[in-house]
Image (tube, rainbow, N blue to C red):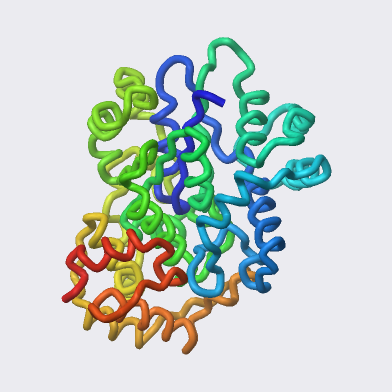
Length: 372
């Protein structure tokens, strides 16, 4: 399908804002989270094919680090070659009936299923979105937004689509999940280690793929400070939005966790200082600091200080989320993070896919001011 742009990133990082901005202007339609459980179902099918252990299958769109690691290349190969059957598609589409995480739902959810048969997953989904959301001559392109879905980016790029990952200061992203009205948007509170590793997943994909044709990284802070420069001036003309439409939309209230100023406001930058305690902010920087440095975010801790914080740990109880009990802080999680920190700092360490996903991302982390 021509005219498909995919947006993803960690929750509360500005995925919705970016998708709306990209869809500004005539001929474009923003389609937020139309098939989240279909993506989960596809990942579960891949994990079953791989005979994966129990942990990754519980939360299939995981951080992909350590116990939840799966090869990005193998998953992309699955997406290119697998042919789901009719029962699979009906089950995945039907599973979203009443699901609050599906933000866009067609009038007839099974419309287009027959045309999906005999096609690879991404080809079938592209056709499904076109059949349900490009229903008038006035719409010639779709901006499709999902969260947690970075592992679908390589396959979509290979199919010729543009993909954008949005990153935000992880402290602000997590503050927007943990404080204010955050739970209204993301559900019950997840363990701190889980949300840190999910943010790292976005960062690692951004670092690894930033030179890939069709791929674009957008920083939330740049988007809210200067959306026209960030999008209209820097993105290719085929996906760059209409500047006048962006100007007209700038005052629209967003789904902020804290105020009606909303996610389109610069007031959302640095909110972690008021909404997260010192210990939580320090833990986030200790866990995410390497990626923060590589993406240009300000950090204050040395590697030695990060090590002290990791050794001390955090209180990451998975309240109401038993499926995420793996992320409760313990000696095993501490050793994983200490080993990862050591691998970034020491020149004699070898690349570990389970810790860094991509060799290119690992190399960038080691040369981004993290060896100190």
